[in-house]
Image 1 (cartoon, rainbow, N blue to C red):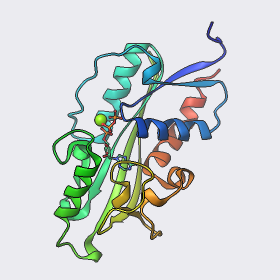
Image 2 (image 1 turned 45 degrees about the horizontal axis):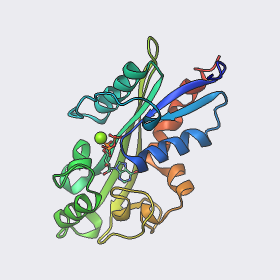
Image 3 (image 1 turned 45 degrees about the vertical axis):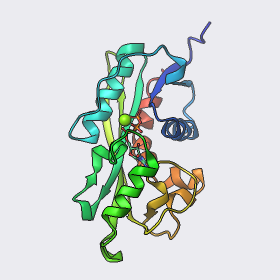
Image 4 (image 1 turned 30 degrees about the vertical axis):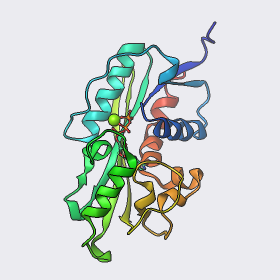
Length: 206
Ligand SMILES: O=P(O)(O)OP(=O)(O)OP(=O)(O)OC[C@H]1O[C@@H](n2cnc3c(O)ncnc32)[C@H](O)[C@@H]1O
Ligand SMILES: [Mg+2]
């Protein structure tokens, strides 16, 4: 029997590496009385395509789908890379920028190719994360975190996921893929967004 004093919260992502980060950030926030449940611990459910014009719209749709399907409070993230020289693209198209969903190497190679003539002073970029919390019959909240930096000339490092090997956070000379997981969480768009939801998640335990 599930412990009635423990509130189960669904962390909804189909990206295993992102899911791991979401769980890690929430776990390290140390909220008592919450059990985080991943998507592989609940029955499969149909998901709305992520075709929103903004990260916030997509994050809310993912969290609403998860909450409606399971009856659990649900946290979801929609995120991506905004590159100044590409007019903030790939943005909401980040996961499928080179054509096939989640092909990190191809997406990264395409951004590098698109910036091949862009000089160092104009390679600014930011990671953006919108995180939504949807509680069935209760709160709906969406918050944003950003992580400013620039695009390197070539990939470096094998930590993280997605565009991390080509993203150099402001104030560092390593790529995001060269940071430890703790360093990434402390600075990242996802860490900054989720930190804002911690009070709402803590309030679920009463
Ligand atoms: O929607 P879910 O199932 O959560 O997984 P996803 O990979 O499709 O995730 P998104 O729709 O939010 O797309 C985000 C993409 O942006 C990129 N991205 C987001 N956060 C990143 C990070 O911390 N480091 C590197 N790339 C990141 C990466 O390419 C992701 O696939
Ligand atoms: Mg997605």
